[in-house]
Length: 237
Image (cartoon, rainbow, N blue to C red):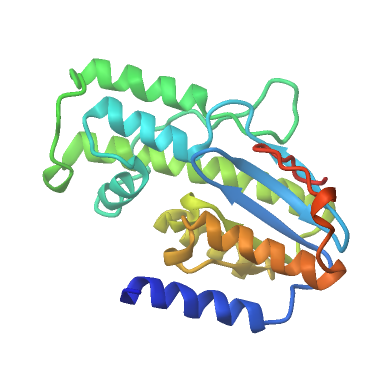
């Protein structure tokens, strides 16, 4: 077992010895396949908003690949944005037409592709480390639009039903701007924001094991013949 694996095991062990969160809280799951805002109750998870098309991590990867940046795109864009101006360009904040709180990032992705066309960005490999000026600011503005869309939904739910505790999870939970923005919002509004260690944000096995531990503590292990495996098990079941 290497040092990284030992660190992960220590972290999971620590989580397993902590008390479970209070009965009612909220969670924001942001990854390459999901964008979902949920209310966590003592016996169920209630979906409040979810993506209708591209997930944030998927948008990061597709836009980065189209620009000629390496995979995965999220961490690369994050590093570029840290040295650029995310307020320079006004890009669309995804909203759905029916007025719900659901997320939509396909319009933002399309807007970025159009900006690439204007600049002659054709997918040829570019060096993220030396990227600066106009294109760096464009990527920073792209990231800002994703973070703004996520925060808008959190604000809306907070106004309607109040959020006391918000847990951020998923691969995009490693994003620096998202972590800083959600944390600042929590401080300003008296909401406890729980951020995972970056080393755990992309470890699906650890997340599943933790969820399984909580369920086991509540009701023990079900008989094997009662277990039905589903590759896309919906939240709330």
